[in-house]
Length: 110
Image (cartoon, rainbow, N blue to C red; front, side, top):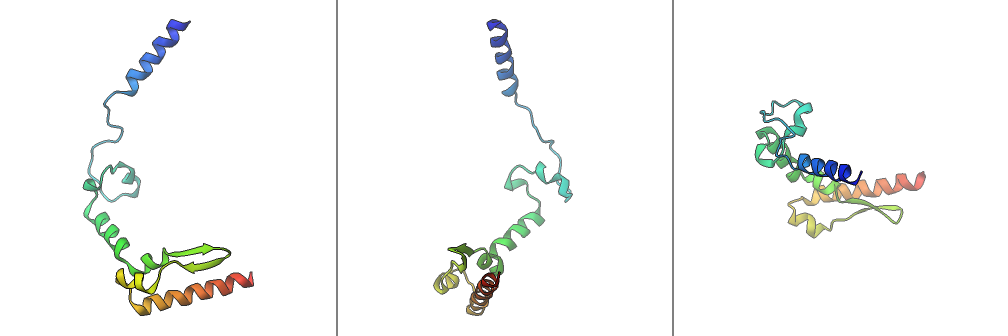
């Protein structure tokens, strides 16, 4: 019995070390079902890189990501100075200060 278990463990070990591609090597055609076939950033299609760039440089996304819920209130976890360093305009910053204030008003009503 011990020999059988050892043999099975050895076979499983060898099979798990096989150098097989789990995902097929085929070009990405924009179909959402094929997203999991992308393995590295170097293989991303140009559109995906543009989308990633837009997400990382969009002021609205950057500042909205810094709204946190802390001690039962919403807080903009970004100072005006930090916003300026991230090239976020004063108007945009003030807009989000107002949004956070309104969120807290709505939060108190519920």
